[in-house]
Image (tube, rainbow, N blue to C red):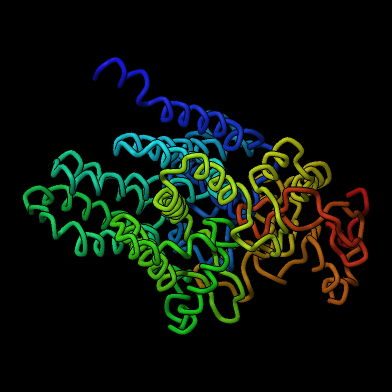
Length: 534
């Protein structure tokens, strides 16, 4: 490498890396402790706590039971539906650093940082054009959804990381026919399975289709090259699925009851909601398949086919209940965000590659505003989402879990029982305030294997000491038979819903105005037969 190549050739790349790393330090790591864990995050953290106590993803943690949706994730008292990697990653971190919210989110944010580094290394390895570098850097920084999913104490971050890493090693394997790339590919795929079994199987389908249509035409991979990596990978897959297999649990029910028309409708919902969540600039992204064939761009064709196959696969095997549903669970599609960014960026580069200033200006318009998502006329109005997100990080709005957790810690004695409604809001309180006993995890009658549990865990068997009602459910509660047995003792003046989830259509970057008369706060009730000071 000559001196000029070493000092000048990579200036845009080095600058791009520095810029992304600076933004990552802020967008990924700043304010990880601003909010309490929301329900799905708390499920991961509770599972990690179970790993620390028993070595396995048990649902029985001291006096509490983590029985989400009537135990639909459980098999013989253990979570066997959720792949285990997230819990086993988090458990040692909790052991070393404690159980604050930022600790729970930290390892997942680090996976996010590593994902950005892989993408940057990939661009450098492929000697991408400087204009394309700039476009991808601008797009990565501007994609708030990607930052938000990386910050969650959930499987999203490892799933995206190992999908990107597996895609990289797959292409390197086909290009170099190297045995070490084969081992690295199948190791990464094993970790992907341990992160998300759904995304693993769908990604295998994508790789199979891509290989048959593209790579096989160049040169077939030899059996000798793949034999031992594939055998070891298959053995590890069989071992993982023998323990953590969602087909063993009630969570597999949607696979059997969702109809094909419902799944085809889900494709439309998924595209609509990914656009609303700014996974890609929808109006511009819709041009990708058109220009892929007009310009005969191999990578646009290949990338869009991978996008379509992945989308179709998730829709066909999604565990989401689809009867009457009006939104898609976009969290299952998060590995498509890096691909969508790459396709959108490449299309912009293909169209305007000779006009660098125009490329840069249009990149900011595409990836730093929602103009090409809903033309500013959707649920959010016209905005720059990265600026809105940065403002939220500096001035976080209040949320309802933290004051409810503080109330429980200050007023509820150890082992006193608390019913939280809606039931899915139980788990943040169960994690952050674990001394209380959280009631009614199972319906009556409970699943047969849980008939022996403390009756307080079975709906209606024993009336809990306290009820914490989040939001409008308090209206239905006031009309129920329980109203005669409980007195309202406190109202927490916070909007009841958690507005800091990663899905942009459920997230608010600013405080929301709420109607107190419509039951939009947090209500705390106590059994009338208990003394007020009890």
